[in-house]
Length: 148
Image 1 (cartoon, rainbow, N blue to C red):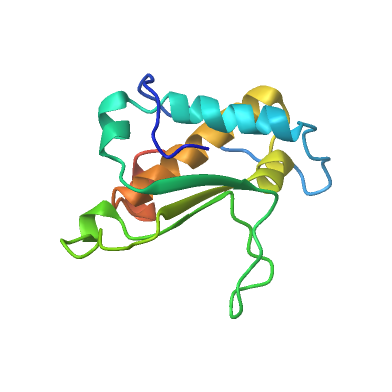
Image 2: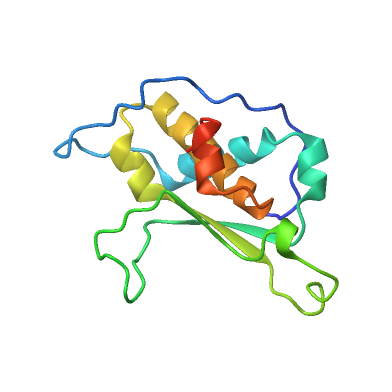
């Protein structure tokens, strides 16, 4: 997926009740192509003024997160930002730095969703959440804003 984002509309988080699905529920069946389209659509909705300020970011989709050594083996992530937030970069940062990486994890999202609309909403929230980390916004503030 390209690191430059096309124009889009502002996103307003849904004020749903946040209720998840039961542990024995089957994952929502969605093809990889449809899931990738949901991620592209979420990226398309990023306002162009914001998208233009993103710098050196690559977006990936993977099936699942693999906990790292020392992490709880039951760790489940919907998305992950790896990199140096814009707020922490200084003049040396551009000299040979690898792109920041945002990964959206397909299976955990499908596991908690009951419909196509749920998947689209959860993908959107996850994409916005991880992009916010690129801009230096932490989890606590994102939860306060309804993007947790």
